[in-house]
Image (cartoon, rainbow, N blue to C red; front, side, top):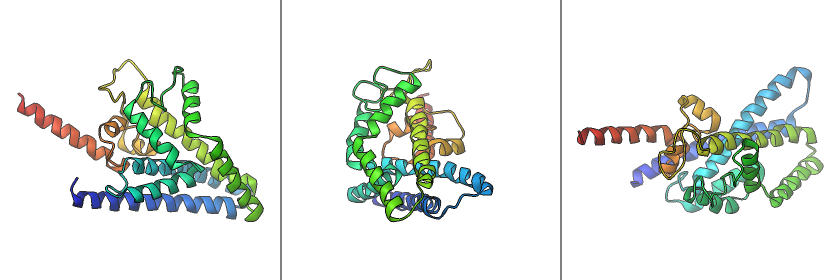
Length: 253
């Protein structure tokens, strides 16, 4: 990658990350500290929770790009700082712990040694249990508990607001990340995998790919082929790969 391309990727990636983090914080602060429940506001709260679930997924995806150095190419410290911040906001996850696990996933995708693989139980619930145990730890629960206690005892936030506007979106994002970012792309089906990456890309419209898992469902195989491509660049990467294949095919005919 040229220096110009790396700078462009960094600018776009950091700008999008700033938008996602800012929007997440706005809903988080409003919902937990400022929200007052009335019957007429219940539909608004529901919309906020749905949006916050998607934004929470986005926080994880930003951290995921950071793990590959795709957020800010050539700036490992900046990648680590932003990735750690996003995981902490999302659910007090440890960037240092997840980083080697995710690279093991790419090295052993869809087979023994892959921490995201089902571990012998390919059913939806069995595989989800394996996924949940991989990414959630006792240390994380302790950190979440400490933050919740500070929110309630020190800052006066209602516990119900914490559950609705932080816990529920975080758990919803877990399900979103698992179903669209792990289970659907890596489960075995009648259609064989294209290569040793053992990853499928969903055949869905681009906007739906964005809504489901920031393109990690619709373009998962492309991600494994090009881990340095950020989430927002995956559709363009597919077009580039297809153009190269077309040119290569025309040259051999």
